[in-house]
Length: 118
Length: 113
Image (cartoon, rainbow over all chains, first blue to last red; front, side, top):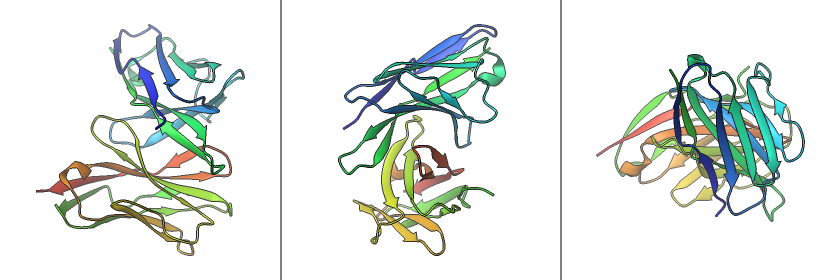
């Protein structure tokens, strides 16, 4: 099956520092990767859509300068939370899109990264 | 208007009983897909089942089935013979046209032994 990994799984940092989260598709090349944010007891909210070699498409209300996305290859996308503040504390989940033989796309999710900003 | 509505914030079900988790959706796109995901306390999103808008039959995957009522715009998840390991958050999601998924607010299912 298609596996997506995220690193780190947990990170605690001081306010004002930047944090990088990696998302990798381990056994397939992802046409597109997605970054979601989930606050406690809430749903997943899409932050941005990332395609290899091009700029990410951000959802309305998501600051592109705050959440930098780099999609360097078909198997790796990174999310950098710049100058993190306590309100950025959240669960960040990535997913990678894979084209099935049926012609439909399916998203496979990473295990998530829990960010705590002190 | 909410694109995906899950009206049950929490449900408690006796082990081995069947459970139905409600999901209604709103779209004007004739082509769309509906998904159910399970999120245990570990946080990972586990894909359960998929229903395409043009699929004639309800999707089934093992103990999971999707009760797709297109005219009513509902896509309820049915879990048969519930198990303790089914306790988790369950999210309904919809994809219209492109690849983006829109998620509902989720239902926390607790299986009682």
